[in-house]
Image (cartoon, rainbow, N blue to C red; front, side):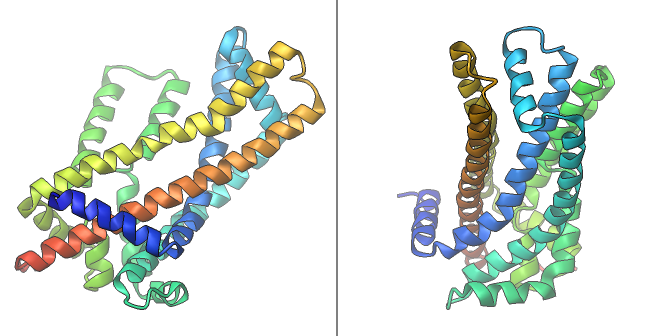
Length: 297
């Protein structure tokens, strides 16, 4: 078995043995999933308005939006909730990331003890997460959707998006070990970023292999879109055929199903995020114990 396969296998075993880590990750990803569905409703609402909901799939999209956000007032409330949750999503990841790394590093595997240790790492982790927000693929996807809605796709904007994607990939390759240097070695975030870059450069092959896995895990957003949007649309397609789409009981059932689907995507995201941080922790431990890390001042 190759080293990479062994790390992945050990990571899956780790998750199976310590399900608390999944619960810890799910807390953060639930907010992420809720933000995701609110933004998707907002995006679908704007796309359906742009296309005047006058044909095929856009008629269904219009019905979907009418069920989830039947009035402009409710949509405004959803946007306000989205902003509040976004603030929470900005503040919580530094806590949860440090807590999950502490959990993995601790021999006792104490959930509560790991949570209490976050405070000493909040600010460096917050600074790093704030820096990386601009290089997040989800951020880029939201920017692309906004450009589409504003009809300002042109040569300049496409060039800027391509450059943005290139910088995001470079950051993904060079900075995956930063959080571990901050949390485990108590290094300031900027110096931790430099150490991560050097560590990635001198261990490029194994880093690239896990970056590919990282990118594949980002495909879960496509699955999330199908779950929280595709399944309700399929239900609406069937309801439209049976002429029960306007039935209030059906609408209530769809809302309940959507809530359940958001919870499901949060749990799936929690498993993936827990797996993600576990295998990166194992890669970090493996390569830092195999060689002497260069001293970077």
